[in-house]
Length: 224
Ligand SMILES: Cc1cc2nc3c(=O)[nH]c(=O)nc-3n(C[C@H](O)[C@H](O)[C@H](O)COP(=O)(O)O)c2cc1C
Image (cartoon, protein in one colour):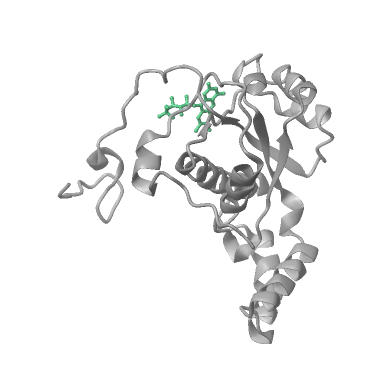
């Protein structure tokens, strides 16, 4: 019998109560909950469903200690029971990955010959002409960070805190964890249970400061 795990916190509350945790209790995340968070994280969308994100899951204290030395000694990296090194693999732009996505689509019934033919023609053009991004790293980063957002909200819905981190030296992380040259490290994501009260909430800009109407900078009227 499979028991489905349900989160205890709804999406709105998870979004509003998620904060960047700077300190973690040593308590491990129960394996079934961690597995569910990881599964939900990669339900994130991606262009042509190419899914370029890759994650190294650290739970061994020695690995986390190694990562701390690449992350300006930030303590959350060793305190959190689980830390993800969130990467984007530029090789996902290649034909092998397109074929893997086509095969995957066949298993769910979402793929047919027409769509497969279209993907085989359109995806190489996207990466050759690059109308939507300047570099492949922009492309890997765009997708991986969306998955990171999913991970953080999924985690919070199960009461698990997180801290997205760009404070690391990419070259050092790549060397220490045997990350191939074609793979970009997008962020680190400690996961666990916050040990200290969160920092005072820093606030967010007003909706009307960051959402515009019809053209950039034009005031949007919203009823909230
Ligand atoms: C991409 C990214 C990188 C960040 N890097 C770090 C970091 O290296 N160390 C850290 O303590 N917090 C880091 N943060 C957390 C931010 O400081 C925090 O999200 C922000 O101050 C807003 O606070 P809140 O998330 O608690 O609402 C990062 C957040 C993001 C989204």
